[in-house]
Length: 185
Image (tube, rainbow, N blue to C red; front, top):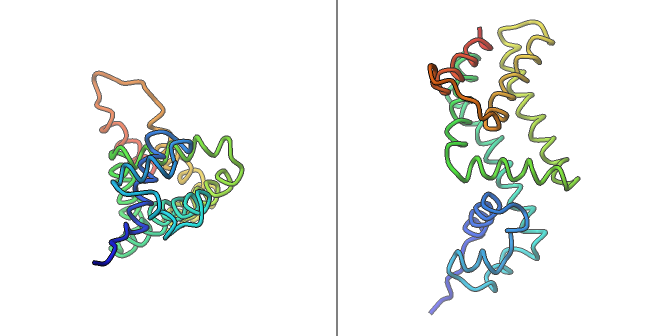
């Protein structure tokens, strides 16, 4: 009977869940193996060590939140404002899932203490900003205007989760949609 190996993708997904729940210190081989219901020996079929595993986790997350998102939006075509709305919708949907928001926040927190993670996150932020800037430049010829709008949209997408205030007369989702529309005007 052949031995069934747990795919690398399953290890990576479990690692990202662990990261979302407990930060980088929670990314440990034995607890992740237990979460998957397998022995830790299978880990070494795919990864040389924890550092290689973390590198693959971050590669996977980066591809998911940058390349895959941009490819999905661009595959539908449409006007730049529609692409930006779709980007915002996808970002909101991703962060509504516990793992999506948890991973993003864990990596941002981790980047404050780890220069390599900070460098990688800066690259991700730069690519996300470049995409938004390119969309704004399609309907605004002013580089400074496009940069300011891209920064405001990104700040709304990323920073909105850190703001705890609420207005009992206006649902938060309605205010966020209105803020986006003001930036797309």
